[in-house]
Image 1 (cartoon, one colour):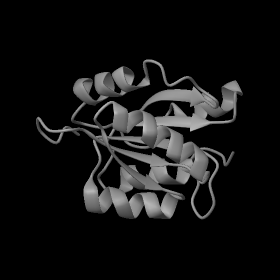
Image 2: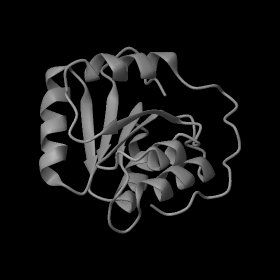
Image 3: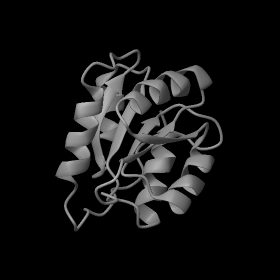
Image 4: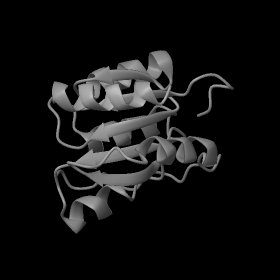
Amino acid sequence: MDNGKGPKRLLIVDDHAGIREVFIFHMHRENFIVGEAEDGLEALTLVERCRPDLIVLDLMMPKLDGCGVLKRLQERGFGDIPVIVMTGFSEVFARDTVMTYPNVVDYLTKPFPYDGLAQRIRDFIDKGLPVAVAPQPEAPPAL
């Protein structure tokens, strides 16, 4: 969760480099330290190495999709890291599915405005998650 009083660390996970670049640009302007991963497997490696304060996670990615990342975060003891899911899916089913994961704090449909996003991220980091994270339900159906 919180890494002290210094800049907060974010991890953006998306297979589209342009989306990562725009996110990083906006978040650097807000004094965040931002790591990036282009797929779910790389994201898990970075989480274990750097433990971000918050993850912004795309659902549809190669190698390991967003739901797979969410499940593995729980299994590997990183279920207390808040996650904002972003996706091109606007269907209620997709939103309802990912919101069953206890560390998912928000769901954004692409494209989304960056106005106010930094403050929302700070609020989620400061608020934190309950210490006892609920057990993960059976894996939701693939999207």
